Length: 185
Image (tube, rainbow, N blue to C red; front, side, top):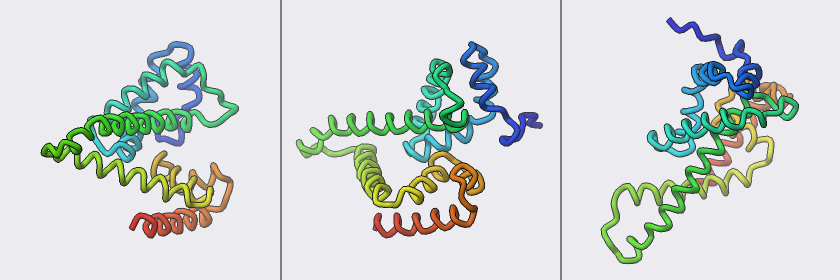
């Protein structure tokens, strides 16, 4: 039976501040509370389990090393933690795209391409297209979609964070997704 507190009662801020004081148990508590959701965020961005695991490991190392830099006045502790994972995942994607660029000699020499290389090139193109389409959305729609699908927030949490009615958030996400679908086709 799992005795960890539900997400709403876990005090991310206190745990993060304890990490800043060198409390390893606090880092373990954050891991126990959020690892599965953070792994999901990383996996949605990098789309590879092995890379998502690496991102999560790097992110927790960074959380431990940079916990003293967390400033509660600038945002929530949970948001800070999720942003580290998101940025680590985006860095991993950039690194993978640089590695793909180096492998372009395979294509130039018309060597038989491996399925992995073709998959990576395809994902890179999809990622760039998605980024372009996201940039075309209005700020509110883009932010709502990113909070929901990258950061893992619920519609209720997004409404609270953005201080707008729940129906507005649902509408922004629905319309934004429809616009993205049209742009990606």
